[in-house]
Length: 333
Ligand code: SAM
Ligand code: SF4
Image (cartoon, rainbow, N blue to C red):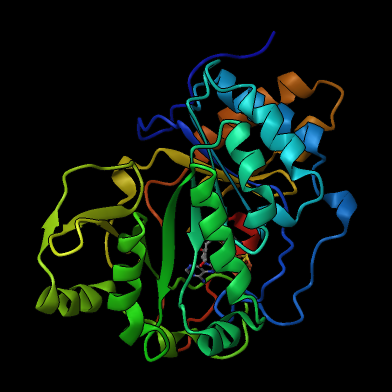
């Protein structure tokens, strides 16, 4: 019989949010995320769409109410819309929200199908609106497609949140205008600190920009009023007086947000990472492909609750680049 007991970890945190990576592949090569010659996984190692659906159902049965599809780039996975439609069918049956984090390059052709399947909001990653800087940061000349994707998502009725990694000397000066642009088209925006995940070319430490500094700079020009709302995640939000929009700050390296953590991450190969900043994991693919998938998945989820660490262990400093060997594109952002 399928286990239905809620997912509660050793620190009494209830896990209600699953970030599910559907592929490690991507059509961009953001310099802080992956090297140009990224080694992608052989396809047979990646879970099938049916396996991803079965896993999602097991999580929903145990109290997960929100699923975010991510990657790599989720929309480059062939037939991913079939999975979105299948998961959309779970909305109202325990699942309350189905969302997606995307780089936006494929959004124009999928926005309507996402909305039709029950997706209401998407996060689109955009670090700059300067075509030359975009091409430099992502190593691909695709800004136009991303901006079209954002427009198509809005036209399909999706709420769009812009996620921007703050990068010293790169997009640092543009952040205020990017925020004004986002808010002018009714998009919330979240700023993210660069995290030490996976080998990349160049030195990420050089571009690490503490968000406290960005906030100080913004406060010279805008009135930022802290909002009390919390998502169980690492975001802290403010309302920007001059634009009326919402601005979030994700500061995993400078703040401790772990006490209210409500999430786990599953990679495209079915590895459940109990913490983005830790190595603790269980193998859900082995469980799924065993003789007793339901029993073994339930057991693996119990184990994940046992090993979820109390807090993350990120470090970023000279010489400590890549303390964690997996890329964000593997665990999903
Ligand atoms: N490809 C999709 C996208 O870019 O939105 C989804 C996956 S991507 C890994 C998710 C988020 O992680 C993006 O907003 C990206 O900017 C962010 N990201 C990637 N590597 C990062 C790093 N080392 N530190 C902080 N954020 C990172
Ligand atoms: Fe691809 Fe997203 Fe990583 Fe950029 S951040 S390379 S879009 S997975």
